[in-house]
Length: 424
Image (cartoon, rainbow, N blue to C red; front, side, top):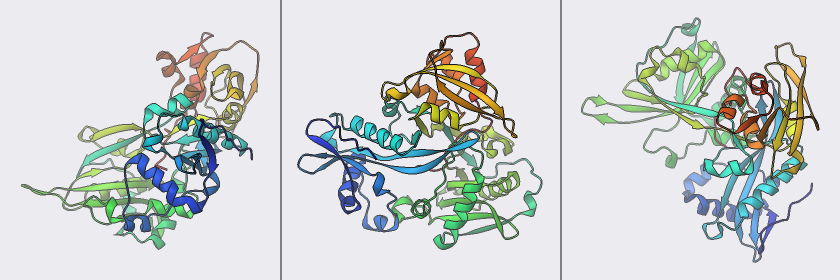
């Protein structure tokens, strides 16, 4: 694998071994202004892949900035692609504004391309940062505050399912959550699986410092016989007022395999004794709950950006996904950071698949462009959650040939909203 060593004067790029994990973590803590207590550190596993963990080091050997990545498989419309999940990006406050982030991003891109990962994804701590590196906001998530007792529409089969409400037991619930989570995300772009034991254990970590006055983590499981069909990770936070108990239900994550199990799960969560409100975790913007609620106006919604995506190999990434309509379009892609992507690419859909979607081939071309877009906007549409037509109306995509925006928008669209249900 080629190593990137370009860094600002006075610095060098290095791979960080596990033996330097304390130094690595100290940079992260200085960058994000936190320091975990000993109990939290003992209970929350460190999920880093040290073969993918890098730093910018000063000439005297001090780590000045750090980053790492996960070897994910990213669900995309109709398929999956290898993905470098960028994470743990931070610089010491006394080494900011020196070009260290740019050096780390270039290193991350080069190493990912070397590994054959055509796409990178991240959660942005600061959304204003990553667009300039070609990452596009490709998905949103929805959080709802729902009053207790909110009525749901009936779903056949819901009443036949049973419920188990119990304290978290990692030995029992890590495999249960992993199995249901992976199955529930089938067909949803962005639904990254937690494929390592460390990531699975971290999602169920529950140190007291994370509880903010709430109870230890509980697990609600929906079962068909003995088979889990849905789960919720939650805690209740005790609140009392003049009118009595007004406790909150704080949901970390939910996943359900079908409409009946989703209905049964929310029927329980929305009717727990001594509670007044339910605060959901990250939901897809088309989540079943929105459609099951009889009166969605009683909720308080908040929509936030979710996954940001970067296309590292444009032809490989675009040819890996499926399309919802046939299209033949020449894309003039602008990519100032990765010159191999910069230029014109012809995307032609070919064979219609049994599910009604189309595969595609992407080749370099000198033909006149139909659309011009920065790689950032192309990445934003990659998971099917952003409209090329909307980006064109905003002046971010330029139509060079009449009708090209409408045709490409229909092809790039996807019927299921993308989302990643957990932050990596």
